[in-house]
Amino acid sequence: MSSANSVRKKCMFSDLRHCVVHFRSILFTRSESESESEIARNKRLQTKHKMASMEFTLLFGLSVLICGFQASKDASQRKSGRIPCSTGSTRQTDHLVADNIPHVMKDKSWLVLSASDEEHNDLEGVKFILKDSSLNPVRFLKNDADRLICTITLNFTDNIQIIWPSLQNDENTNQWFSAVIRHPDGNFQVTIYMSEVTERASVEEHKLQQHKFLDADTHHVTAVYILSTNTPLIQSTLKKDVLLDCSFSLDHQVDVTVTWLFQGKGRKKIKLLTYNGARKTIQYHSEHVTVHEEDLLNGNASILLRDVALENQGVYTCSVSAAGLYGDQNVHLEIWESPVVSLNVESLLLEEGQEEKILCSASHYYPLDVNIEWLQEDQDKLLVPSIVQNTFFSGHIYNSDGTYSLIGFFMFRASLQDNGITFTCRVEHPSLASPIRRRVQITVIESKRWRLEEWLILTVVILSLILFVTFVHIWRGRLSNKEACVKSTTLTLCSTSGSYRLFQVVGKLRAGINFH
Image (cartoon, rainbow, N blue to C red; front, side, top):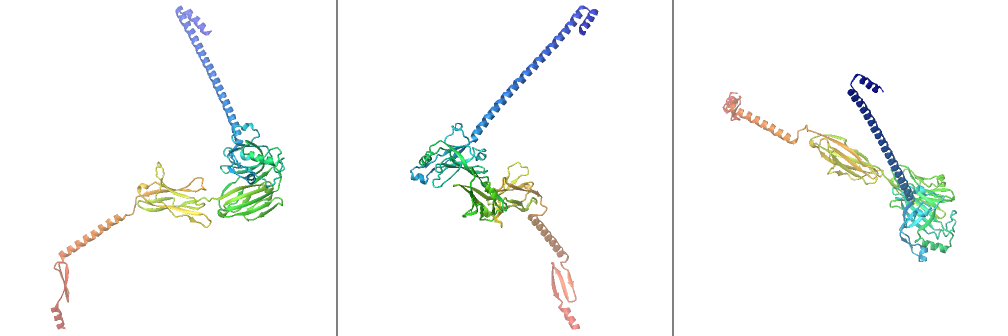
């Protein structure tokens, strides 16, 4: 409105052409500003559309990712309930031989932790589907199921009467299986005793079922007895207390018998202790082991081995008997002592040409598998360290505690080119997660002592000077004392050509004698 008024005022005082031009310029400015605002509005709309499209793409991708993750999780959960097992090879038993029925077990089988058969129809081989029971073997099998090492065997109990209250079958018609499962990293080992869930059958039908087991694809079993250890392999140092783990679980209350045995390398088995569950008594056969009766009543048969020594390493067997079922777990005890590494020097300041022995000692290690290696590294550390040649070893030194020691050394002659190098002693041993390294820094300076060659040259020069001075002295003596004589009352000494001659003055002696 103000711009229109200004135009009118200018038209009143200017010609018509000037008013028209000025009015057109105002209209053009307005149209430009309106077009620019429309372009900006379009850009904002395009930006909003792009943002919306990006949000939709992102949400769609996240939904696909979540669905895929859930699907993979479900698949992994299904796979985690499947444990691949082996069932041994051709074998025969007494009663099967009598019946002329060979027992050939299939090589491939599966232990399935699920009650649904349809979920595992894709599995090839014999399937053992664990039904629900009061025991919970899943706690051992839920992790690393595809890495577990499993072996399933058929237990024949014709000559052993097993009365198991939780089973509804007749005592002689139950098929018994045992699954031994080991973790590849030695985290645990568990034995699961299982009975097949079947309808009542006669003894003759039961024998036929045992034979049909060879060709059956699916067996529904229930876990009735679990024996496990979380320490199938123990590596301990000397003079420590070690807990040997052994636990058992039963689906009903029953008195058990626990026996611990020990077998050292190259020795017979000896009994360490025996627990009688019916009498609630513990009989010790070794003073180095202890067990608590309260723990035994709660299914914990672990023992504590005190103050271990080298003679204590070997195989310990935990045997548990319950209502005719016998199970055992082996615990291997190994003694590992890490080496103590030391050097005779940590740094060396040598003169050029000086020789020094550099020594590395690995002491109090066990077992014997130790390796000492000397490496040389340049000052710039640009090249790969090289192995020092001509390294000598002392041989394994036997210590009083049964451990060993070893010394590796070499002789080093310093040169100026070796200034700043580093020698590294690297020690490897099975008890070490990584090698032990000890370093020696070398500094070489110019020699301030005279070498043998320099001493020889100096000696020759000094001897030459002495000979020269002697020669000059003799020569001058010959010139000055060529005819000189030294006379006395009884003797006359003359020097001719540098030599003295003694003359006896006979006349004067005679005259003297006559005078007296």
